[in-house]
Length: 88
Image 1 (cartoon, one colour):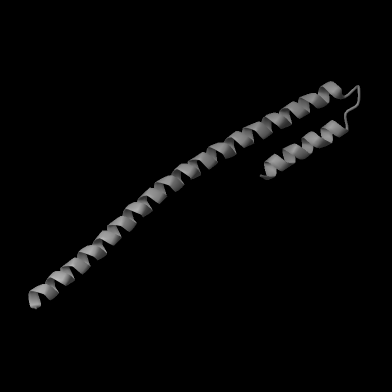
Image 2 (image 1 turned 180 degrees about the vertical axis):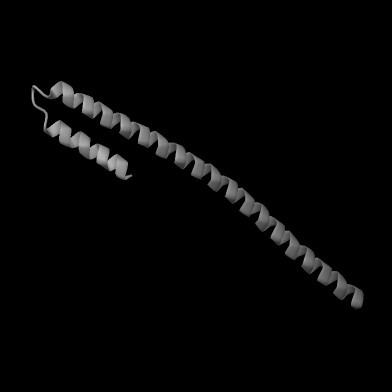
């Protein structure tokens, strides 16, 4: 995030300080800053996609474990009910 903010700051400072003689050179710096900004954005977007996919994977595992745990409790209660029935 700092890289993005610093790139935006550089772009802003360069755009304010442009003069007729420095326009071409300044545009090169602006282009470099924007390229860095785009690269950082793509990297963050890729990282976000990885986190999103991992989150989906973990939610699926949690759902499976919850279902398994519920089934275990139901089986335990069923076994207890059967034992009570047998004892009666």
